[in-house]
Amino acid sequence: MNTDAPRAEDITNGLHAGSLEVRLARCEAEVVAAQALRYRVFFEEMDAVPSAEAAARRRDFDQFDEICDHLLVIDHESGSDEGTVVGTYRLLRRSQVEAHGRFYTADEYDIAKLIAVEGEILELGRSCVDGVYRNRATIQLLLRGIVAYVQRYDIVLMFGCASIPGVEQRDVALPLSWLYHNHLAPPELRPRALPGRYISMNLMPPDKINRRAAVAALPPLIKGYLRAGCFIGDGAVIDHQFRTIDVCIVLRVDRVADKYRQRYDPGAK
Image 1 (tube, helix red, strand yellow):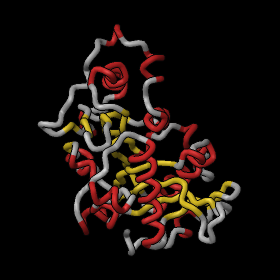
Image 2 (cartoon, one colour; image 1 turned 90 degrees about the vertical axis):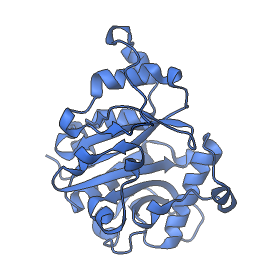
Image 3 (cartoon, rainbow, N blue to C red; image 1 turned 135 degrees about the vertical axis):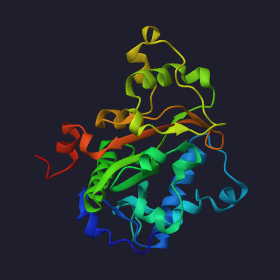
C-alpha cells in the first residue's frame, strides 16, 4: 500500500450511493480485504490457477500491491462494523513507479511510447466486484472514484491490461480481429506485446467480421473502455495463470467521450 498517499476523503470527497462508499484503502487491513475479494472472484468464481501461497492465504497478491493505491467500494450495511469491501481497482501512477519499481503492464507489453508521454500517467488493474454487487450502482461508483483520482493527480493518460476469458486464440478470433481493425492505437501511442508473448490480433479480414457478434463476445469492462474512447495496443498475450487472453488498453484523458464526462464527473460542462 502506498502510505504516502493523501487520505481518501481528500480524493473522492465522500462519494456514496445508498450504503455504498468509494474511497482509497486507508490501512493494511483494507488492502487485505481487497486481496481476499480478488481471490474469490479470480480464483474461486473464475478459472484462474492460484499459487500454493495464494491458495493457503486465500488472497490474490503480488509485489505491486505494496506501491499501488487501492480504490475500494465499501458496503456500510453489510453487517460488519467496518463495512465490507465489495469492489476494487488497483491504481499505479508514474510517480509511484519512479520511486519504487515498474508498471505491471511492462511484464506483457513494451510501453515505452506510453512512458514517453509528458505528464502523470496511470495504470489501471486488478478490477473486480463481488457477484452480489455486480450492478450499475457499484460499477458507476468505481468509475466516479477513478474520475476523482484522475482529477486529483492531473492524469493525462491511462492504460492497463484487460482480459478476455479463455486461452485458445481461435475461440476469440472474432473479438480480437474486430478490436484490431477498429480500435488500434495510433502509432505514437501503440504499445506492443513483448517478443515471445506476442499473439496476432489480425486473425480475420474486416469483411468477414460480424460487428454485433464481435462486440457481444467482449467482456463488459472492455466494452466500457471502448465507449469511453480507449484504444487497443498491438498484439494479445496469453496469461496462463489467470486463464485469459489480455489486450492492452490506452486512454488519453482529453479524449474521454463527452457522455462519460457528463455521467461521471459532476463538474463536467
